[in-house]
Amino acid sequence: MTSTTTVSVGLPVEHRDRLMRLAREVSFGAGTRLFEEGRRADRFWVIRTGTVLLDLHVPGRGAAVIESLGHGELLGWSWHYPPYVWQLGAGALSPVRAWEFDAETVRALCARDPAFGRSIATWVGRVVTHRLQASRIRLLDLYAPYGSGSRA
Amino acid sequence: MSDVPVPHLVTGMRRETADTVSLTLTPAGQEALEPFAPGQFAMVYAFGVGEIPVSVSRVGRRELVHTIRSVGAVSAALCALRPGSQVGLRGPFGTGWELERAAGQDIVAVTGGIGLAPLRPLVLAARAAHRAYGRLNLLVGSRTFEDLLYADQVRAWAESHGPLLCRATVDRPSPGWWGHVGLVTTLLNSARFVPENTTAYVCGPEVMIRATARDLLHRGVRADRIRVSLERNMRCATGHCGHCQLGGVLMCRDGPVIGWDRAASLLMVREL
Image (cartoon, rainbow over all chains, first blue to last red; front, side, top):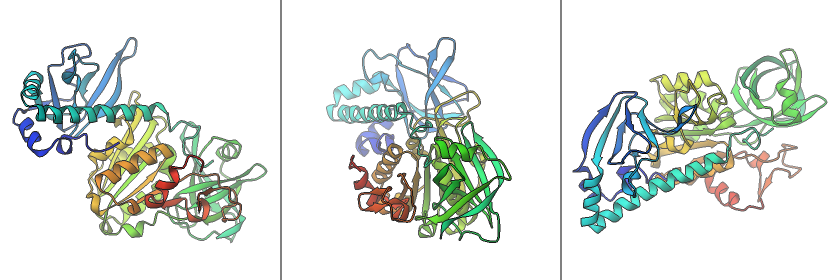
């Protein structure tokens, strides 16, 4: 579990600057849906302020929240891997300001410049690894009554 | 430090969650225990059932508050007590958080589950004397909203713009949940601290402690400034029986709060 998933430390300065030149400032009101599970993943975001909830539609239960993302975090990685389809949905819990990136433009730049492409792939891979590890730890249900850390 | 249980009256009982209560304990007679420091623990004796170690979750002028989760015979008996009941108390035992060593530094307190209880007195003390420290952060992890300890207080801290930045996260959100969703370590991204000038306090399940300590180290917090509270099977609490031994450390005497510089290698040995 490390902090290298945020864009500020996840990319070398040169490649971060290059990526940021492709950024577009956007904002979303609380309750706005940013993307839906099963739709084409044609963009991604880096959150500047606010909180975004990742969710999964469960029949009969509606949107089950999986995780929340905040400042500096990458929102969306399905754009990086075929078939470029969102695996989850996402909605703004609070007003959100973010940098938005067009997926095709970034993928094209990755293809043209292998060093940049490697940096992006490493960064996105770290994000995925981090979330996988966090999910694994949550699966342990550490705070459940048995073995929860109580001394009693 | 008292080696013999001192009778205490239950003068208050507050149900925190479905399986956890906070007991306010006041000396039943003239004899009282020495003052507790945040992070220290008492041996709480449920008469006729047994004795368990419980960290202090609030320190008053004469009274102590212990937050207890019902997970076994003794803790279940303690959780069933009502005002007017009596218990025996020995202590104070063990090392404290040693907040005074963090003077002038940023503070990051990270808790998981019932780990918030031993850290609450530290948070209260740091908040009360916040000018002596840098920025204060409290990051709270819980299984669900319903399992969150001191839920009203945590929410009030999270919504206040005072000296304490408080964030809370749950593994499984339910309707009405107002905080984050995910592992508590992810909240470190929103904490305000300069790693090189930070003291961190971590309490919770061991896996959570390891994950948090690694993240703090990676960010640049010194290992000896990451103070963790470890759980072991404490019996005598006076360093004689050896039940709580972890390598060369007797947790009841040398712990429960120790620096990550000592704890890291001990926790890597599966047989300990």
